[in-house]
Length: 462
Image (cartoon, rainbow, N blue to C red):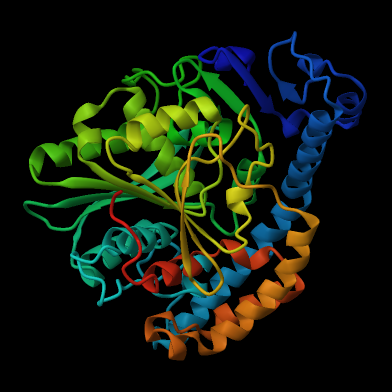
């Protein structure tokens, strides 16, 4: 990438671990002139006199280098082999003597193997205040699977209408980094159109790096937006967020997330006069979900926004600064609240990126927080109110929380609901988490449990 790729932004700072050598890392520690550092793309005149901020960038680059060079290859080999072996074992146990096919409707990701639930909880009906949240959290969970699996679940298990799966191109990384699917509650005269974005796959280390990366762009009229999620959602080189993207003759057709999904939703709304829209995602999928709705407002897509009834995110990281937060709050939460940010326990991803200040990254929207007993607390967070960063005390208590969750998993299905009964693979993961604190807290099954056990406390709007 060249700096011309960022000219849609009037300010930016993008970390480049691919260009971070020993000299660049040491330069960060001893010189405030980050604009002349090859490992940081920003205006040449940019200076950071705060050693604390330069140290934060230094440590982040080291972390990304470690993940990409050492952890990435190990996870790709061992994790891929484990996923394949578990699918093979599942085939044998279910009487299917067949070689696992990663594109088949029976192949599951690590997320789907840990928590195999795909059915909607029958006790939660469309009249239930939890219905939108329950539908969104299960859609966010199923979004981790392949297209054939998702189609089968939506049509056969949910008895709903599968519309389309999207595998979307990232102009900045030259890769497909965003996936989502769209479905309706009915084939004809639909009342709900649901968009579900995939979060960070368990075995995708490059996406782990995107989650921890504090890079940003300052976009006119919008504010500072997280660079990696801006890239994944379909921002264009040089021009950022034009309202329309035209195909260039002679180049292969690429699907960009925001534009392709927006057009699909608009077509569905035109064909179904009573339909309303839900947008959802878990983890980084939640970040894409709220940015998708925010860019709809940025482009003044009033027809779609007027029929948006909820953006439900589960374990969503921070996506922008105070200016972006106020823009989103003004357009998504007026005249009624429509952005519900659901968090659970000590999930670390909502604390990312770690540069949490009004000038960099903060949270916004209605926060529905569940503790490890799945008790709900509703917090009306105004723009500027963010979650505090992890502390040494929080790290210490994570071992206790992990041990408690392991003990809880043994009786949860008998104590609260059979729907929440946990299998041996999930219990094994919880046991491993006792030795590796922090590991267990970004698993989507806890969000499914939380919504299921919330009673009538989750609002559809406020």
